[in-house]
Image 1 (tube, rainbow, N blue to C red):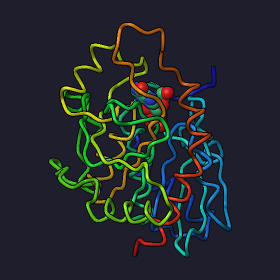
Image 2 (cartoon, rainbow, N blue to C red; image 1 turned 90 degrees about the horizontal axis):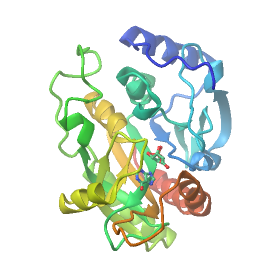
Image 3 (tube, helix red, strand yellow; image 1 turned 90 degrees about the vertical axis):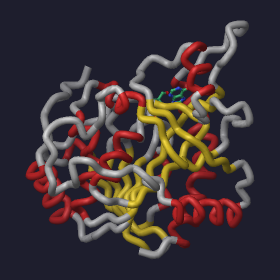
Length: 288
Ligand SMILES: O=P(O)(O)O[C@H]1O[C@H](CO)[C@@H](O)[C@H]1O
């Protein structure tokens, strides 16, 4: 086991200190931030003129404990736009404090980022979804949040955002339309749009839970993203969310199939190129 510190709280000043360190280290002033999901670290390869900083070289920065998350910050240029890309996120199930899970979005905000593109691997609940499909996140269900486990739980620092932020249109409608245009440009026909449900994990869902989620209108399920999106919405970032459907959720008892992280990572490997071209064309279309 790595010597991981789980519970520190990240105050505004802590995030500011990390931001200052990065602005001194890098000449980039990113306007767009990208978070790579499980198995999708290669998404950062599309950045040109890269400056790579390992999380372990950033003072007071968390580490990644999950396989498929590379734990590096990559600054670079994509279609003439300055970008920061996080190769690896912090999941609540790893045991991290809420302010640690909120850190990527808050750091991007203080760095001057205006648009956060968040990616993940997710299980397909919608029966029309197949592994390799890309789902534009239209909305989410924040299960832990609905039960008092919001990433914003605790004292509110108004410098990040208001006590009661809205989540309407948090997955920005204009960005969603641009993703559809980008998908057409790239010849990606298996693009979907749907509702992502965040569960606490790390156990995969039971058949009964999946049937319940399906009845509730969920299209894809995962264990991340929503805390980052809520933190981003809190501080006014525009968000674009993309789920790579890495596996089909198993809704039947009469099968020996089981979800597993290896399959999730394998789909990431085989489908990363599609996400790369999609994000690349999206950045060409975005005006910041
Ligand atoms: O959401 P990301 O980080 O892409 O990873 C997904 O894949 C892992 C399970 O295989 C979980 O962490 C789940 O959330």
